[in-house]
Image 1 (tube, rainbow, N blue to C red):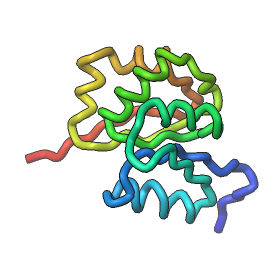
Image 2 (image 1 turned 180 degrees about the vertical axis):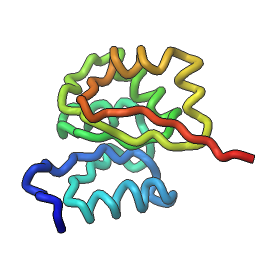
Image 3 (image 1 turned 120 degrees about the horizontal axis):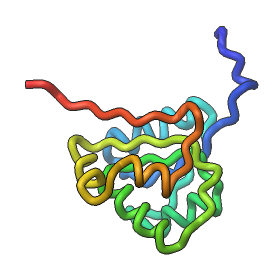
Image 4 (image 1 turned 30 degrees about the vertical axis):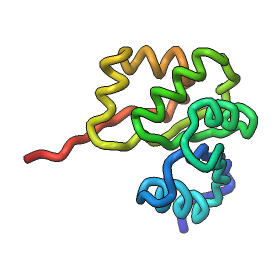
Length: 130
């Protein structure tokens, strides 16, 4: 390939989504493994406190979850105030649930005050058109 993979450090992904779902199975494990990432599985079923602990202890660079999972993770992070300086990116998927976070707190405030952004970070949303 034309990509110099030595320029990229493999991600350490906190995979808190269930493996019986496409998000956890394909995006969470298969794609991570194919691209040399380390998959960190904080607990057998979702637990926000366990995720925050794993993100800090394992120095995860990426976090995968649904909007409601991120609500729980961010609530726990506000209590613990962990070192998340190594977090670079993540995926939030789960339909229109992003509105859960937006209605509880402005999205930009959540991102800027709780999770650090690197220059290549972005936030995007999408909906299906009828």
